[in-house]
Image: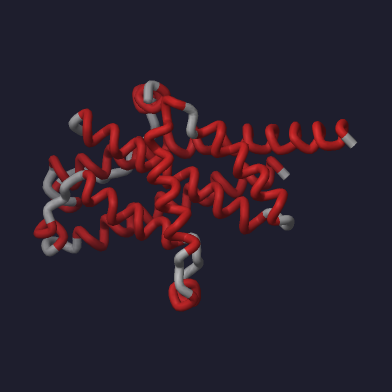
Length: 133
Length: 68
């Protein structure tokens, strides 16, 4: 990747992963105050100066999660809206030509690849949440 | 009361540290996979024209991630 693309990809990734951790912590912890307290400390750890540029992406993902409509939540688990946003933003950052997705079912393969990634991420995060209880 | 509050703070810090480690580990894993995905899409011209996108995490990827 070109350095600028690489940097933007990393920032987006940090924001996305941290947001996924935050929403799963809020979902899994019984007490909202307890979850909020842990998430606040996590935000301080993650968004130190060297990763500070990732904070806007994080806030965008959290806002998208909070804005998920009841209809969306019926169709798919609510935290999956993070993946949909991440997929779209990556295509923009990477300047993927739209015509690529017209050919050879590449869009389906792209979505499957990222869905597999999020499933693996969720597994790792849930293990960590269990460990931190 | 003060001691109880301090204990609670330590507990939150300890939990957040564990989650932070998870963010770093998950980020490194995901970055490696995204790097391969990028190669497939942008360089090989699509999934069916190139190799499979997934490959194991290497030390090089971990170094790249920690250098951010």
